[in-house]
Length: 139
Image 1 (cartoon, rainbow, N blue to C red):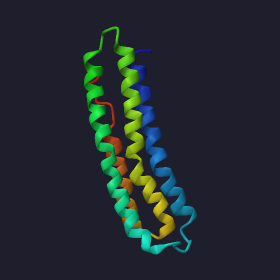
Image 2 (tube, rainbow, N blue to C red; image 1 turned 60 degrees about the vertical axis):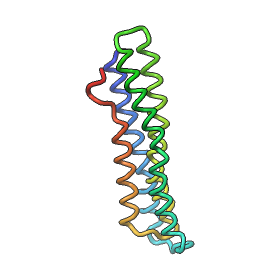
Image 3 (cartoon, rainbow, N blue to C red; image 1 turned 180 degrees about the vertical axis):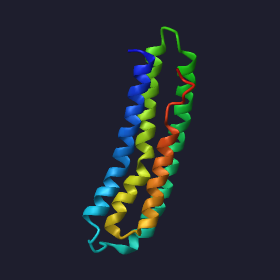
């Protein structure tokens, strides 16, 4: 597989993870918009949990940056395919953790969290996922 094909697949995976992050919130907000809040007192703790979940991706982002550097060093060598595979594995895990704030926002629909905090959590997931884009300089 050529370097351009690998980059294309990684870009497609990024868009897929963006959809996986935001789709539950959009579906739950649409489907359960008229639902009475189950436990409204949990709205603020859910928002705090969503904000705190952003910090779970910090160690994964550091590992991702190290994998980017290792992949850059291994370009045009025999270890390049393995470096791309390792980068994709680390990136996948980091993007899963980057989806957490949006998933918490999706669950917060059931406890009556307002739309603005839900949007803020969704935007934080988008920003976290944006950090995991493959830079143009690589490859």
